[in-house]
Length: 506
Image (cartoon, rainbow, N blue to C red; front, side, top):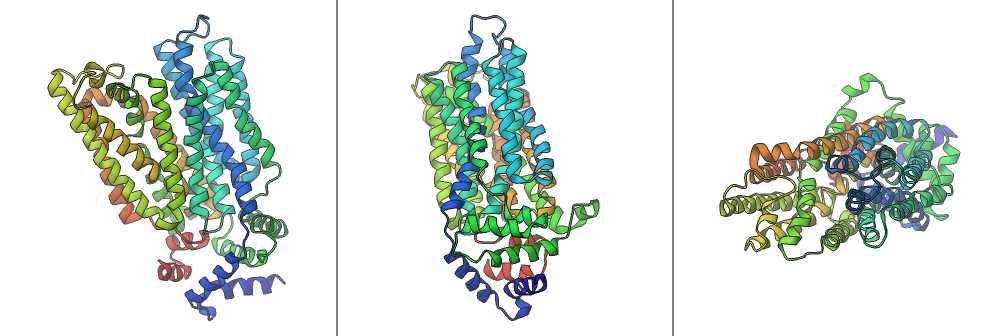
């Protein structure tokens, strides 16, 4: 029976078995036409409660730090240095969580990894709620950061391995959409709740995720990699509906898994099907942080003040809402426009806007005289509230956030989940997540030194140069994954016979 299944799989996939690429696509389209997506959307919703929790973790510090800095209790009161660590220590926990998540997804699977990562979310916020000393606040932030690191690795993998190619881009983009939604939710809740009640609010999404994931399936690809074909077919029937022949997709995945081999070994690092996508994934994560997103978000409050938007709390909500809107737009068009084009347009937008920011700071420094000694607490914006250049800073920020949300915000995480073979997904994804969070921590912590060395204008021009480089990198190295199965994407890097079909479809 297994021989017949393998034969059927090869007949459906291989051109040498008499099917032209267009014939295979027609058969694949016929299968997808029978698919019902309702339960796939349900499983995706359960999973993206993790990124929503992640967003609440990132957004929590913004409303909490001002209150903790003025709290009467001296055991909990944060000075300037402690407040900085309270905000940034999350990235250290997330980097560790990325490594832990890479091990977990290979050992216990995608579903259980998601369920277990809700535990440090909940315990972290419980410790913050019950905090009596500053070290308890740090511990709570590290635990929630740890869970965020696991989430940022596992959820994109879970969704990409469940979703079919017609909706994978949209569902994969919902990861970043829910992150920015969580950030906005924390900002809005922070307008009405004190820091303890805000932590209680932030603990709700991970609790719901743990409950909902109990009823969701493991991904078919992971089950097949463990030799559990019957369970994989049951998972596919749940995700695709009763009318779609799950055996067809199961045989296709199984055939590709046989070609990929077993477990990861050191020799696999010489395999172009491993090192090429790994290089692409690492550079995507690095370039995402080198866009200057953290610097732009830092200046958001003072930019709004310059534009006479005095309520800085509401201003941060406006920035977060802008991210939500345009990340949602990206999710809607992802499977129509494609990843590569959106990355290029996003890179162009950020390159121009950060260059304009540099011009703004240069002109401000000439107007104000000695502003090269810019510090993070007092910017040129704050020095001259009546500056006639405020429109340039405001327009640059809006243009940048729009561009980032359309491309370099969601797409690196989506592409990371699509390009790695099953046997290396845990290892390769953990390297990418570690690169992302590690570079975020380094850039955030060295930003002031960079400003002192290059001036504010020079720093933003450096970011503009990095955005120009990411455009070139995207054009040359990043493959278009729209409308491709995961097996076709991976074959593109490896250069197997499947590459012929991939090329014909592109």
